[in-house]
Length: 68
Image (cartoon, rainbow, N blue to C red; front, side, top):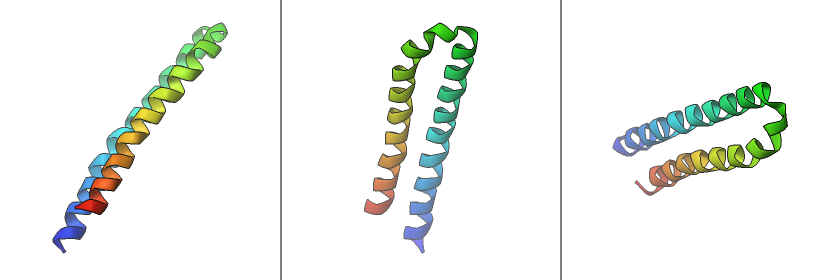
């Protein structure tokens, strides 16, 4: 029971904050593109990199939950 509780807590905490970060990154990128449509090409790559790095944190928490 202890394993299920700690593993679930790790996934819950490790999944909530990266999800919020990915949402905020996408929101701010779309807001910036809406204000300056010519900057869409310059914003796309950093936006995807930021989302990938935030998703990597969630994957690390998944690995920790399986190891724990």
